[in-house]
Length: 302
Image (cartoon, rainbow, N blue to C red; front, side):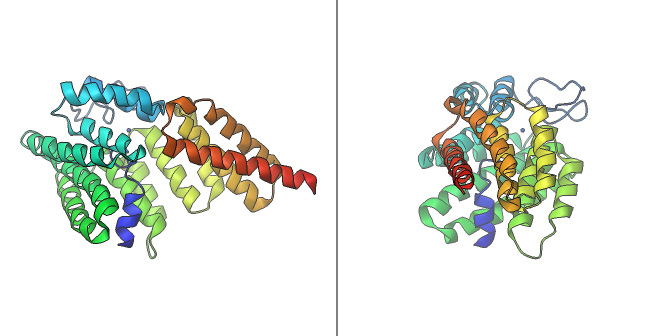
């Protein structure tokens, strides 16, 4: 049950990194493939890529949702489109649409498997992961454990077919990072190194590593990777918030008011884009913003 609880925390990250994603390098990519440059490109779908870009590069959930409504209609054979639609439903706590689009992800992945076995198995894993999140919420851990077994089975099959594929390693890597950070007797540094070496696009890799180091309370390293990710996607309010969050944690640990004031500036900046975000993401930003103001006021009063 502890394993599934850890995995459930990244239900948004994995399905695109969903978890769990467009390369930031100079190499051009095939239209519709945000994971690969030049080698082994897949035609994933232009509308799906646009939605992916708005969601992960710009952090605009509401615009991405509108593009995904079109993508799941016009590119219904692409499982990533359905997985992203389910991921947005997760942020909205819309459990019925999580269930619907988890099943659509599984159906599209089954069809895809005939022409692309690796991606077919990968998104069968993602679809069962999303359905497992639904089962966990509605029926409890026992119902979800069967889904977890299916997730691991399909991820293993995908890895056997293409162990160095960047899309596979982005999704699988987010899962491994969350497990490594949250479970005892794990090796976070090994998971981070593997993730950094094999996954793409880079802006989601650096973001994932920043999250891992944040959760490990290694705030200097977390700041380093958060800053790199923010340089790559400077308009994303979630990354702006993440940097503020790390600065705040470091400021509390070191009793440093300068860091707390700097964190407050990042929270202010993230909140200027509140119209892009669902309430489940906006609420923690607002809460940390209030708490930081209170901490600064108390410190200055003493």
